[in-house]
Length: 355
Ligand code: F6P
Image: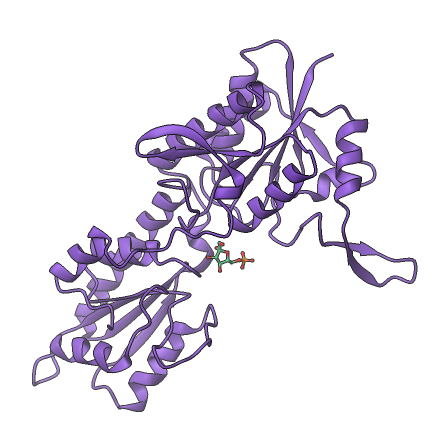
């Protein structure tokens, strides 16, 4: 009887998810006694009746590492500890179905789960580990906000895309003497914004870690225009950035329009346009860095299962491929530290953080 590993994706997708699946399967196929099976659509597939699962063989994963998305599909709204269950009267009530999941693991002969996810997903991993499930986590997120690992795959590809967007916006901003605002993802951490602002040469970079003053932003923008109105400016803002005086008012998805409104209120001399980069950052082909990182983490996660190092997450720390207890991962975010060298560098080339 072969040993079975269930792969579950959860949270938003990101470039590299297919590469990590392929790596787990290819590594496992080098041994005769392992079977890898994927749950369709996060935990949904493994909680469905009948199960919606996909046996993952070497043939199935061939060449998928270069593709974006995930062949298993994923879901960022499914938590087995608070899972929507349809009642007899047709209403939906959230219930703890973790025991059903554990029962299914036992009945269908699974030895372990490899759970690929971000911060919220690994809170689930830890709770399952505490209930005795043999689980190994793999960090993924374009936001790079998972603590304990130097990078999560997906981030470098997203930062590259955001940089290309800045590059394009700089040329059109300069042609029209406009202020162009690019809103990128990053609810709790401004890594994508920071990298794109430095790489693309933006004038202003606004991130959740540094609540900004609109006066300071305006000061910087004005310095980019001459007396006759010539000049241009580019702002990169993370979705989770917020005004210094706006207590507790973080609303993702509309910070770019709030900045526009604030500039219009003072009749700022230039035209202002917004671009929301949105899900473009999550899709598409992973770059080489993310493919390599995903492959490393996939191989490592399989080996952690073999070594029975359950309740841990495969990570890359200080250039070493290693693992860490899930307890140390959750509830912590890898935020941009204000003493980070890249903040210093950005300020060194004149980028304003509105502080
Ligand atoms: O967590 C990743 C992330 O892309 C966030 O940056 C963003 O706010 C959110 O997911 C978007 O989620 P959805 O795909 O459900 O719109």
